[in-house]
Every structure is written in C-alpha cells, then in structure tokens.
Length: 318
Ligand code: AN0
Ligand code: CP
Image (spheres, helix red, strand yellow):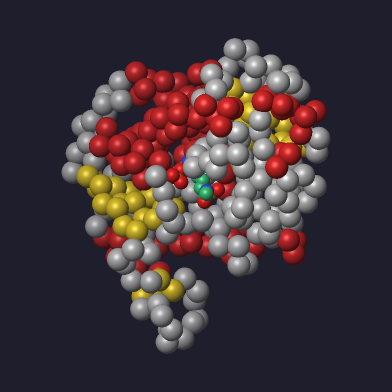
C-alpha cells in the first residue's frame, strides 16, 4: 500500500477486518517486518490517541519512530506557493517535506481543516503535498476531510459488537463550543457506505455534510426518530459545511446532547465516539459511563487499525 487517505486505499473491507482480527489475536506476529524501518509522524495539530496508538502499532511491527510537532519546536511552515516570505514563517513546506522524507521510510501526517478556505481544505492541500514531495508512502492521521484510521477502528469495533448481520448505525451531530472539522463524520460515512449496514445520519438543518460523503446514507432531521431501533449510536460534533457557513457554528442546542432520553428508544444501542469528547455537551456522564458505552474498546482498536495499515505499507516497500 502506497498511501492511506480514504476507504478505497484499503481495498476489500472484509479482508481488512479479517486481517485486523488476526493482528488483534497476535499483535507481534509481524515484528520482523519493520526492522530498521523508520516511521515519521508529523503533527500540525494536537493528539492523544493517534499519537500513542500509531507509535504502539509501529513498535508492534519492530519499527523505529520519529515524532515531530510542527508547532512546537519546528520552524513555522509556509504552505502557499508564490508568497514573498518576509513574515513569521522561515521555511516553506515544499522544502520541509522532501527533507523529512530523507530520514524515514513511511510518513504519517495530521493536518486538520483550517476553515479559512473550503477549497484549500477539501482539496487536501497539505497531505497531498506530502504525497507529491516526500518520496515515501504517506498515511493520514486525520487530514482536512477524512480520518481513515479512526473509521477503520470504528468498523472493527462494530464488527466485534454487532449482534445482527445488518445493524442499524446512527451517526448523530451533537453540540460543541468550538467549531470542529467534518473529517471524522465524513470519513465515518464514507466507510459505513461501503458496508451493508442500515446507516442513518441525523443533524439539525444547516449541518448537511458534503453530498460526496453522505452518499446513499439516509438523512433524518428528527433525532429521536433516527434513534428508534438503533444498534449503534455514533456521536460527533462538526461545524457547518455548506457555502458561506463553512466552518461556522449554527447551533449549540443541548437537546441534541446524547442522553438516556434518546438512548431509551434505541435497540439497547452501543454508544460510540472517537474521543476526545466533551461531557454534557456531546453526551451525558450517564451514557458515556453506562454499560453500553464502548468508547474505550473503540479507542483500543486504533492500535489495531494502525498496525494493519503500517503492515501493508511495510509490505509495499521495495
Ligand atoms: C478533532 C476533530 O473533531 O476533528 C479530533 C477528533 C479525533 N477534535 C477536536 O479537535 C476536539
Ligand atoms: N480519536 C482521535 O484521533 O484522537 P486524538 O485526536 O487524541 O488523536
């Protein structure tokens, strides 16, 4: 595998899930594969899970790991071409990337949407330059429009916990004090649309996602109706996508906070969230601490999804 930025890069999902269970059963099975290979993880944004689980995955495969936080200790990077660099950014990303490529075999990149310009974000301007200029296989650790390592872990988790072949999976918007990217919901929708689950998205009006990601999913504006009979509730906040509202907060309505009230109409659904989560904004203490909450096993599966992706990238190295 030369790159991993979206669901299509992983190929057959059934095979990917089987490989995940194989790894979960013996996570050091391929510890020789990464000997003398170096993973470089580049963070433009904060992280807890991605940083730790991806590093753990690399060590499962016997790799060495270098981590760089661009905003803590590295030179500030200019990302636009044609700029006269007389401001506060001493280095251009178009030199920085090939230099990073010199010191490693595989690169992971976290670069969130900036919400300054929708085209800049949705063209994946940052991670695509890593793909173009690093000379190395590149994978996303959450880019502007997708978070595939998260969605892959979410799929593994649903496959572990589902009680029927075609569970009803409901992704719900929930309120948050700050504008968050659409990467997690876009990506979750993209992966769910590749399964045969009954997949429903619910959000207030104005929070429509890019139709390219919504795909064949059902959109239901009435949250209680959407939750009826659900087997999995996947909560997430996102800022508006549409037109001039791009990146804006349109609602902080705490009626959308996932609580026992909505969970009561589900089919005793499991509660999922990628974390970090703001309690009593996204979800109540009762629900996240309750017996149906699987947020911790979901996070644990980040190690598994990352191990599968790195294993496939190592197998693709010459
Ligand atoms: C990020 C987001 O919503 O995209 C990362 C989630 C994995 N969340 C925050 O910035 C709080
Ligand atoms: N879910 C997730 O990607 O968490 P971090 O932002 O902590 O990496």
